[in-house]
Length: 75
Image (cartoon, rainbow, N blue to C red):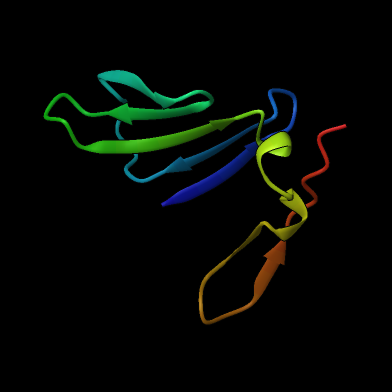
């Protein structure tokens, strides 16, 4: 699993599986689920992420281990 914040797009992407999605489904405005051909969710994209949540709270790390704080300011 990978988590990436794409600052230039203000998009937070959670990759659940490293495979290429077969299609995408916008489950809610700004929330896109990337799906495999057999219907599994392989990725989750949150558009306009800095407007949806406080990215200063985003922490990425191996739990329980060192926590890496990511500077999530989009502006």
